[in-house]
Image (cartoon, rainbow, N blue to C red):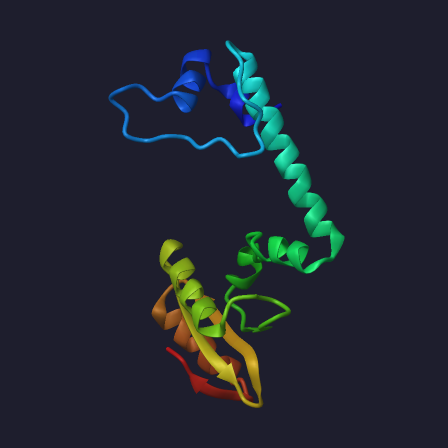
Length: 159
């Protein structure tokens, strides 16, 4: 079942041919066939999307540079529930995250804000790709747990 099946014929028609009052347009992939009349317009569009998704999956599976670039565009998911358990975690660039460390640190802080939590981060001595961090529900709870953990290889507290 396609996500387009959730729309009425009128809503689908507005996706393809917006009303004169609308200022937005929807682009159909260049590989989409020229639509015919009625519901088949949307069937053609759905089919084009399926073909495009299949081609992208084949590129990723091919192992070529183009496929690797396609794979790199995929959104990475992280084990947030595990990481936000109040314990100290060490992660490494290239293994646990793919963004530059400073960007990932910013993402940790945003995630903490979204959950109304606090986070502390630090660089790890001798490992430029590592990042240590800990989440807490309150600043006091976080600071107490951070001090109690006494991480010996901490280099610089980034917070």
